[in-house]
Each structure stands twice: as structure tokens, then as C-alpha cells.
Amino acid sequence: MKQLDTIAIDRVIEMAWEDRTTFEAIQFQFGLKEQEVIDLMRKEMKPSSFKMWRARVQGRKTKHEKLRTFEKGRFKCTRQKSISNNSISKR
View 1 (spheres, rainbow, N blue to C red):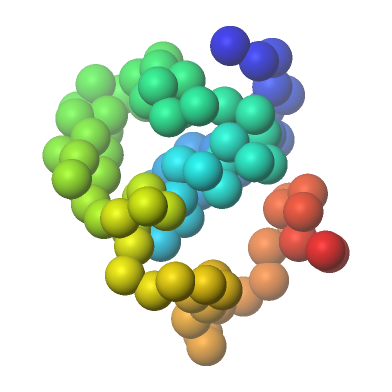
View 2 (cartoon, rainbow, N blue to C red):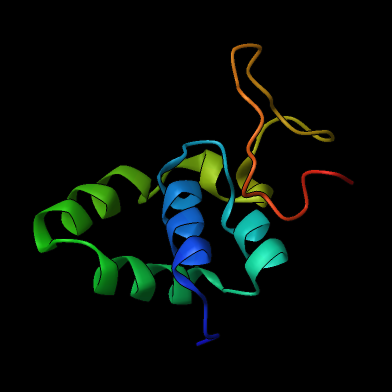
């Protein structure tokens, strides 16, 4: 697994909790595959929180690009604030 600093780990955890952020987006930004994200979450979270997260994301279509219903573009809520720790936000 790639070595990440604490800010990057916090951001990966935040992105993993977000319903509409795909594992592919996490891999693009941080170079972590889905299994590596799962391993990171298991390591960094309390067991009960990890179980809750796994139950939440397992089978969720929005966490995988290929299972999404819209074809192009990215979903962005009108109430969504800009994310300052997102290293690719200025593209």
C-alpha cells in the first residue's frame, strides 16, 4: 500500500464515507485500489465504525463508476462546498 500522510489519510476516509465518491476517484487521486481503501478503513477506524461503513458501501451502485446510471460528468450537489484538501480540485 502507498504511504500517505495524515492529511491524505483523513481525506481518503472522508471520500470513502461520501456516497457519491467512487473508488475509482479515490484511486485516481491517491493511487489506492478498492481493496487498499478497505484495508485503510479497517486499520484507521474503530471496528464498529468499520462494520457500519462496510454495510453502507457494500452493493452501493454510486461507489463504482461502472454501476452508475448517468453516463458522463460528475454529480455535484448544489449545496456542496468546495473541498480545500482535494489535490485535483483545480483541474
